[in-house]
Image (tube, rainbow, N blue to C red; front, side, top):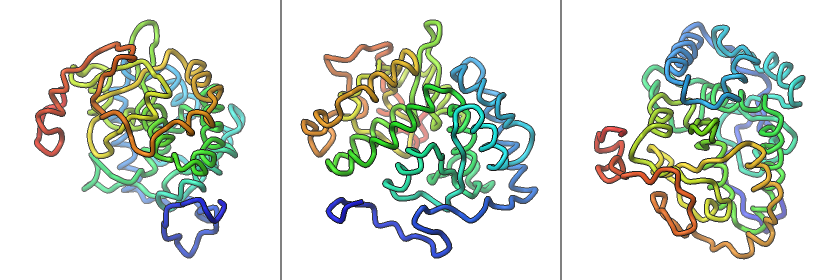
Length: 296
């Protein structure tokens, strides 16, 4: 990046280069593989009827349930034949501009570690299960795969306009916590939803959260919550709809008119919203995860 563009001051481990890639994938132990298998089984018990069909088909195409942490080389070979993507190991969260560069070149950076039994239910930094189980099956869909590449290309422009938080909100409400309509029913395609048993039911069926049709300008002005269930989810009609609303949008004009901070709270419903379900916000109002409130 140019010297006048801010980048997060993350300390790069000595053993990785400027691309932040690990020399090889971790040699996972039998205990690690058992954690993967248990996480996989837990999700498969709740995903039918909640997950988008493209995700379920991607699981089958990549055979992620064959046991243990998948080998990135095999995944990359299979993905390469389907959509030209690969999976590459990184040691931790990586700088935004490096992440964008990998996406723009159809490489998905996946955490080179797996959570422990102690962090089985929740881990703040995305691990190999979140990244591979949650994200990679969607990359088997050609239109979604193209969207992810275009998102990577858009990242550097956002940094130059100092509107990275706005582009981050778009990623959050689509790639991580996106919903879509299938035959009139809401289904999840976001990795943050699909890799956790509580949120996949909460996002699709819960009475607390709002479900609002995606409007890119509105979403990029909307705050989001990192460490709890979302008060609002945004819904697309299809991946073609997502591609049209983003890749075909004039982001230069949008960035020039965006304020530096978010305009809307993450629980807000505003007059331009096409609302599918206006939530009660009961979970949020009762204090969320920290209070022990039920995710209803």
